Length: 78
Image 1 (cartoon, rainbow, N blue to C red):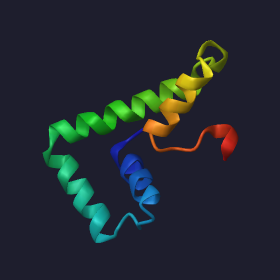
Image 2 (cartoon, rainbow, N blue to C red; image 1 turned 45 degrees about the vertical axis):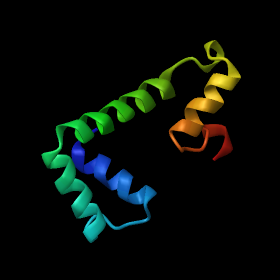
Image 3 (cartoon, rainbow, N blue to C red; image 1 turned 45 degrees about the horizontal axis):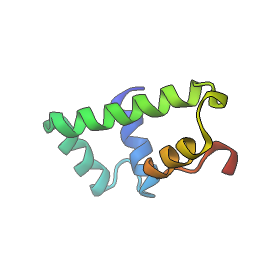
């Protein structure tokens, strides 16, 4: 996933247009802050890996906590 796609998804979650001042501010911050950029990258990787992981191997309470921590709806709840 490229940065523009990531920023679009962040902005979508915030109900913002990619060209809005808030989204531009987020992009500018990520361009200059390696710590936040790494954090966003880590979150993307966790979500990507978890979506492809065999869920039958994950205890249900762990599954619920992960989605809650990520502040995302569980796929079967969407």
